[in-house]
Image (tube, rainbow, N blue to C red; front, top):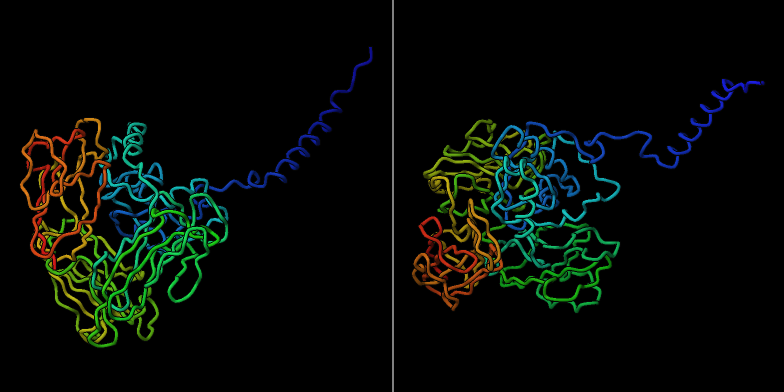
Length: 505
């Protein structure tokens, strides 16, 4: 019987298999050189150098990345850095879903010099989170999130079902602003992206200055009164003449065609103050002088007729901010040192988060050139005094975030509320440790256990809202914040109440 030479088939089999692999890889190039996770996302691992950031209402990872890096698509850097911090620091929560960040959540922002900013050539599969705004909700602790991710996600989803909308985040309607004013915009339930392609639920912002909205379905033109932000920007600086101005925010698709409905529009009125003298200046935007603030507060700075840029080069009319805490200004011409009382923002930052001890503090803003040398004159300085409130013992609490107690406000004022160790959810079901806000205007708190009625003085936020706009008459008003369960029954104890007094000018 003749035996077949099977050993001769082995080389042929290997050749055939090699050809198949080459063919497969040539048509699937992503298999040829798999990238590690950081490289694939266009990031580098988080470095220790950086700063904390507390999520604010209307924030998204996309917008925060754009604010700090000038590159919204670099948000994965923040996710990686925050998750790394969460592994060793209980104050941070790991980000499991980029679409789910909440007001008050602590993020870690690595310094720009320590990360490689590379825009993805292809939009990530999780494009939706780029427009997802910060969810103001009581989120389980980091440990609870790790141990029970399903319940954590379920709780968040129940709270974050909000309608599509666009709005101005700053300035507030009725505000008095300088001739050069920074405007911030936010979108909920929409993907903010550069113009070009038309996609469902996506588009970009337009600001209309002292002119009417463009009718739905029509193209928004480009001129001095119709400003386009077709690169997907969330912020801009406007130069306005002194006097009253109406600013309208309008959302349009990738072809600049106005979308249909009031959800894609917002309007504010601002008064531009006469400038006493032209020239460079720096100042604190927030908090305001005399404010009472929490131990962890966000500080915003601004400069007029100056270029804010990273340290390094010395350029005329340019430099960066420094905050001096409870210490005097550095004399002009001297280098501003770096220590706990002299904070440098040499990456060109406009915002930061400070952690201060309870009590009164003097914050001084000082501008210096690229070599950290203090510039000469009061135009490069500003001073505010703030009082840091004592943090109450751990446990549930509610409070007004804005306005602050004793503030002078315009007749139309935006009010922001927050809750600690409570789940803010729509009315309907009664759940332990959960409920929604009520604002009581110039009237007493409702006794615990009683239903909070609905009338002109008892305002309900039964959809789980954290913000509202009030129209108040001139004079002094007492605003009381009261938390109630899903049946509108007032909860028992001062932890579920807060009171502020404001004066309407």
